[in-house]
Length: 430
Image (tube, rainbow, N blue to C red; front, side, top):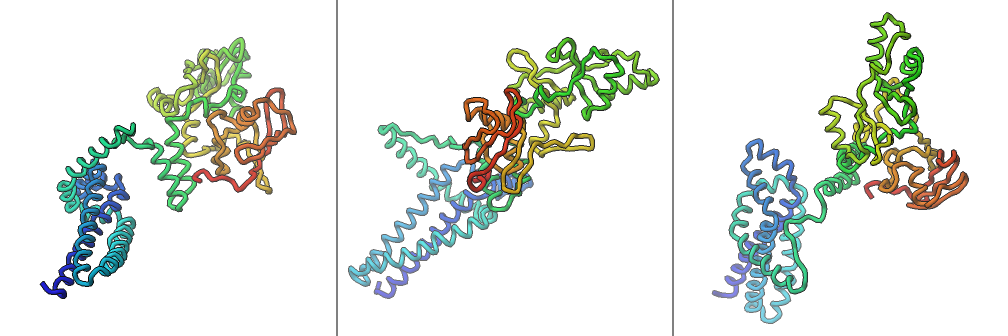
């Protein structure tokens, strides 16, 4: 074989090697970026290619190992062959020629080009290459498993282990990360991100985090004359009112406005003869540690919207409704009878005037901040937790990138604060 023939033979081998290298590199990128949800939907719709893709992704470690082995074997083989031919044709200087030429070709045509195409058309390329990739995985998969076993054996004496089936992030954390990334890239709006985040939080938040505290509960003394009870119910924006007797802690039932009005109508509008306590529904008590997901299921199964929250000693902490849970997902739900008191007043200088009872989660949602809500539910609680004391009016603190100034205090409660970002407001997806 003369030099001319050897050159073109080497060029053909390099071309085939570049094509195979591009195939392995592009397939790895496409399958890594492919949407599992869309593939599952396509498989359920009858797509055979999507079914192959899902089976390949089910053995992710084997697939990645096969792609890496295939790419490296082809690249190393092509480099060795081309170098040998270049040295034969050009002499020792041929090593430099082969290295320079292969470096440009491999980086441009076997790495950047296929991976760029794959990341921008991941689903389409994954479907189109399903059968060739399945063949490559079937051929190289056993070798990939053998290499992985060898690596595990080499790491064992060092006290290191790899758990191929374990993910660093939980599925919920991975979803949060994807939503945050899509929001930062502009694919998901803030309202949509908040709704998805609220849905994911249902398993982590408890009813104590979203309840109406007992200091804000509207209750009725069951010992009042029935006429006064009727007036109190009609003056209330709520349809369900807890009844108490001999003390606010002794809840004896829950009065529904509809039941009261039906009884009032049956009595011909005469409220004096009504036995209010007999109209009350049985009180449902739930522990404050119940997760919102469990409480939502309980509301649906019992077909009721109202429950009283108690602590570990059985003392009433507050009340929770179905609306309170839904608002964690969709945001504030207001109707024509709601009292519009958000407790937040943004100022022109970037600060916010907040009531101490405002929930930290509500403040974060309204202002797109990231104040921690692990140790305290309300803004006042956060300040007390960080200050390790109940500060007086006029006291100011700096923490978490914000300045908290206590404006008003009533007894042992912080009732009003001014919150000012000290730096550009940290975003929730930052």
